[in-house]
Length: 311
Image (cartoon, rainbow, N blue to C red):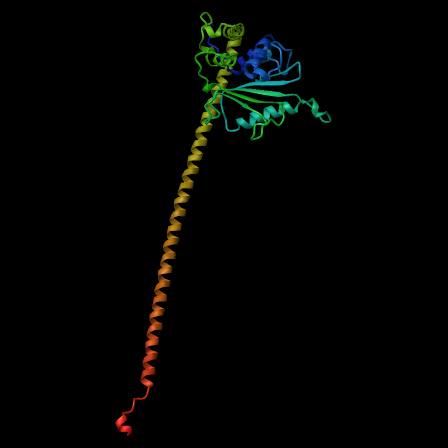
């Protein structure tokens, strides 16, 4: 290719899996990711819910960059690539699935019309830091693993964690393609790229590389994504500064609170010592008073008479 093309850039991704001419690629991709969950048959009938339109893309009007399709059985599929993480991304992913699922019926229609809905997200950055696996499947299950309703779910594929050298499954082939296609030489493709689907995928990238108008539009999308990344990084830095300032203020508040508690403890100790001293003084006063009382009693007693004098 004349210019390297990253298939994860949204406009290329949309053309790769959302173009009508690449319907078989979408079928292969879904079968690779979902396996037994995908609809039966190697090439089911598809109806794209938001087809890729090159003219809209070239006019910079392409705002919906996910891929949505419905198969012959009515099942719905959403595929999206997300290069940058943000705090609300999990909520956005869940909302997207719920919105697609609920949009199947209108007011007054039966719930029986609802069909399984599958959302597949390719993530450029690590989202689940505590989990070493790159592939995740989420459904409505109870703690015992029982599925509440078998109506699809959400699949997350963290490309940042995927680093397989050898390709053993079609899922791995696709993930390796998204990670490495930008660096491949179309005239010397590695063995794992020697399949009909991967060659078709490379042809889609080649079209962006060799058509000047498409490549310029691709560059514009890349510039936009870089700007978004810069904005996100700046936002992250500002948020980190705010969180650090908040932590410093909390530390200062805790230190002041600790100092105040120490002073309060010291004051209480002094008051206790004062009270103890007062009690000791009162006890001494009581003892002295008792001694004085006894002295007076002794002084008031008559002198004992001499027995010889009495006789």
